[in-house]
Image 1: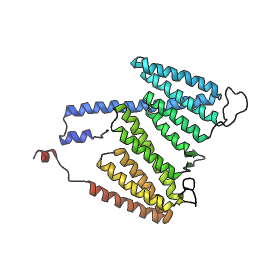
Image 2: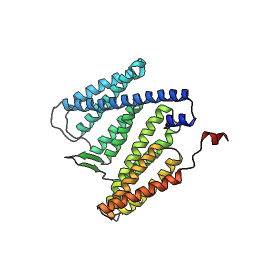
Image 3: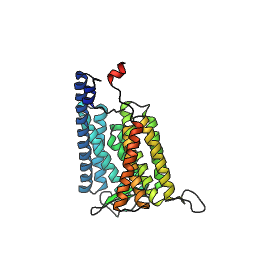
Image 4: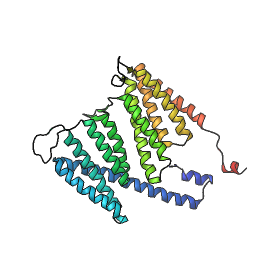
Length: 328
């Protein structure tokens, strides 16, 4: 569990000593440096993978390069010296991206094997995304990679028809199956969270990342469903069965409140922040859908949110207790 502490405030209150303050500050700077390294490695790996696929459109060549890198990374991970651990992780990451991209392109006939013969669609895109998700999940466990664990979860979202796009300063989100998205990723988040509590720290981190990404995607499903509803004719045989946008909106609001209360009581800061963000999105989405986007409605909506924030703060803010009061 990660805990955020204000070291300067704790030192001023006398809760910790100067020595404890300095020791914790050093640990915090070390963690910050690791975060920066991980971010740089993540962006670098993605750039190398995409660049290689663009320069070498042959699926066969991409598979060969990916296979060599994967074999090198696995060998270093299993029997290499400790100082080459980062190199082994980078090799596995790049190999995973190359093999995954090659599988998707080959399955859709975009890249041929060795650029020989006509390209044909070999399998549905959803199946290809599902296979790549399995590949990324296995490599995430092998390399202890949070990046691959998150990408594996996102690929399951793509397998359900989810996508995003950018065009001329316009950002778009597509969720073709809101109900299935909500159910699948809510269940995945719950299972990953339950499993994480009994795992070793390195495995707990991966499970937590999967749970967080899944919870984020479940909220995206609720968001789209609250605007257009969902047709479940594919699930229920017989007469057309749908879930209305109003039903999605009510269910989303109730689950946001319940999740926020749970996160606050169990000190799940990330989940609480996520609930706050999507709570604001949900409020403004429904507000403008029903009231309309006018200067007056924007002002009134802001005042309502501020009032709710003040009430929540008053309900959750107990009396300040000083160290002297604790001693008494």
